[in-house]
Amino acid sequence: MKRESGYQMKNIMRKKQLPQTMNEFDQVVKGNSLSKDAWRRLKKNKMAVISVIIVSIYILLAICAPILPIYPYDEIVLDHQNLKPSFSKTSGELMFEKRLADLYTQAWRQGRLTLSEEQNAILETWIDKNQATKVWDYMYVEGNRQLESGTFTFNTAENRTVNNLKSKIATDLQITVDTIWTTDPQTGKKLNVEKLSTEEIVNLYATMVGNTPQQVITQYTVEIEQQILKQIKSESTGLTEAEYQSLLQADLAGFSQKERDNLTKDNVFSKIAAIAKDIAASDLKTAATDATAEFPLNKEIQIKDSLSASVKATKMHERRYYLGTDYVGRDMLSRIIYGGQVSIAIGFIGTLTSVLIGVVLGALAGYLGGKVDYFIMRVVDIMYGLPYMLLVIIAMAIFGRNILNLFFALAIISWLTISRMVRGQIMSLKNQEFIEAARSMGASTPRIIFRHLVPNSLSVIIVFSTLRIPSFIMTESFLSFLGLGVQAPYASWGSLVGNGVGGMTLYPWKLFYPALAMTIFLFAMNFLGDGLRDAFDPQSKNQL
Image 1 (tube, rainbow, N blue to C red):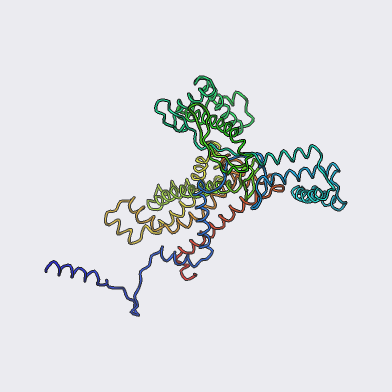
Image 2: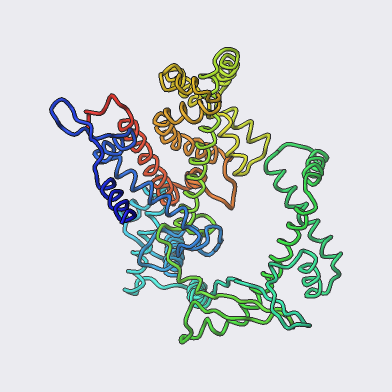
């Protein structure tokens, strides 16, 4: 009975409501936090809410890029160079239209396809204005009209060209090697060749081509050296051959044995995959002309006695490029999505790194003061006096042009403003009562800074970080536009815009779509930053 009465008493205590705070009008005063209050005001800002949705979609696309049903961003199809965007036509149909327009234009220049004086004047005007796409579009429509009416016919060579193109469009296959297998002669177990060691892959390839493993290693060592030398010559021009060789030896000396083995393994495996593609293309040639064959076609082919490969074949010219292709036939939609992956990563990682550096140094300077504050702020003043972009370019030139070095170069220069902001915020808080209480209870300096002061400055840090992301993306875009940022085969919005500028009059989609994708994201981030600034600003409580 006593135990039951104890339980009943506990339940009564649980159900009993805690005393509520009342104001002078006997109204319940509900507690509120800065984050809840900021979120309430942010929801009333429609542009900020729309921006959150847009940024979320961009980030989701960037994260899910590898599993999206899009073509590989680095896959080159030379037959599909500079195809215009289309939602209804396949790449084969666009190729055929492009070739017909070219044949009609040539026939017009030769005088075999006749037009009126007014039509000729219009075409000449377009040519003078460098509007070749209008000429091709017009000649395609006019040429087809005259071909159907019988006023124009192709000659023998042109007919042969048209027929060969039709056959090519109907029969060309795109072969993708999914997995290459080797069968263990002792156990009969199938092993994935890509997961074998470097020595095993070299021995396997040497047996295929009838060479010794040492000959294969020597051959690919030379090929790797030539690739590195070519990259050095592209990055550093105007040097003598002796200087190029010196740089080559310096680069080779920096490679560990593991890196050398990985390079050799990748090169040898790519050769085995190329042989598998050639064999698959020969075996599946009859399937391409078979009207009953269903594509994509998955098949396992035999390369050698114990070597086989799982391949996937698709009709190459049945692809659809919704945003067109670039100058080597790569899908612009895929490159924009993967370019967004790189640009957004640079924006977020660069901002996170610079904010971490700036917060730590700014907090130390603001709380400790004295010589620490003087030293850190003088370093900030000196770096402020140096040209920002020049420092980034110098850093890229010293450390090399790759994505990781680009992150580093942007981050080490971009922490100056946030350090000053955090320093000012810490200086305004360090003499508050709650900090005095923490000191009197024996809290250490790191605990006071990072458990009390920095969390109370998060509103300023969050707003600044949101506004810095577009700045990082713009800086990277500028560097890529100059050729100092992301290097092929990788892409960013800046590199895509830079590649599209050269042919913007002939192929405007190569410039327009990457620029549009970047512009929408930058506007969304700026609107979101403005919304967060208004939401976290106590002075704007009654503004929304």
